[in-house]
Length: 371
Image 1 (cartoon, rainbow, N blue to C red):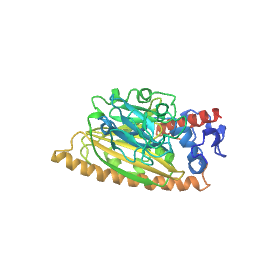
Image 2 (cartoon, helix red, strand yellow; image 1 turned 180 degrees about the vertical axis):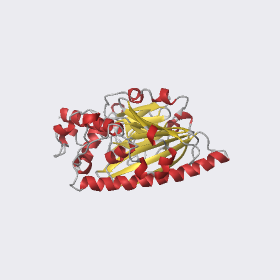
Image 3 (cartoon, helix red, strand yellow; image 1 turned 90 degrees about the vertical axis):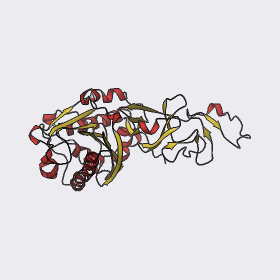
Image 4 (cartoon, rainbow, N blue to C red; image 1 turned 90 degrees about the horizontal axis):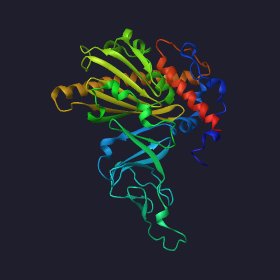
């Protein structure tokens, strides 16, 4: 059975066009509970949302030299990003054209791409160059065999890939962020560490939680002391939203200034605090399980003050994440209980949630239209 059925073949029985009608923020209701609790929506999300969007797969620093490559998975499909001999970054499915073996098992460096199953070799540009013991195969021409391409792009030191043709360019998705955060250059920050969490909730429930500060006073007492709840604001663009608040530098590990939280549809967060970037990538595992990868980047990692700040940042961020995990997992149980169908949104505090859910509805409508 084909694991990657087209969206037309994978429509959840509980999917209703009535639930997908656009709504204004003042009138908005949440996505209905089955979209978080019905296992049929897991495959549907992969095809309707993730396969047709730009997905963050790594850092440009990982593919700086010829032969450097990134191994990742997008919408459940193995992909490979590699720096070619001409310095161009290309993307391919990490699938040999012989019998579907992997060309790379992990990110790294290689002078050529060699299948780890039977040893067929490809150039860094994806052209088959050698297939040993195939001399007796009729009509076998290696010049006609090429790895299937995947779109890739770079933005501010981050690498993205799209396994289906997206409706927008990467530049359109990110339009305005670089100008808004200037003079900060994300590509100038240094990667420090990755922390991964397994969260027992639907990926959309985790994203919903990220997109509002409404829960700060009730879930995050420590973080709430650093941010100004009364001044906390949310704004939306076409493909992303951002939240910001004044940041109290007299408490916690951070210098005073502003906290900025960018969400790029469908599953990337860029959390900017003075001297620090934290990227969060939310990966669906099943209808009630997602994996969240936190990558930490800093302007300074060498001074004693910076090392102390980083240690406290990692500790404090874990505290906040544990709080978020606990509430998201309880929300997931509520969504699965049968006692909840859908609810209203606060126009003042949940504009980001509404924006995200409208983009989900749009992706679902387009999947139905392709039927």
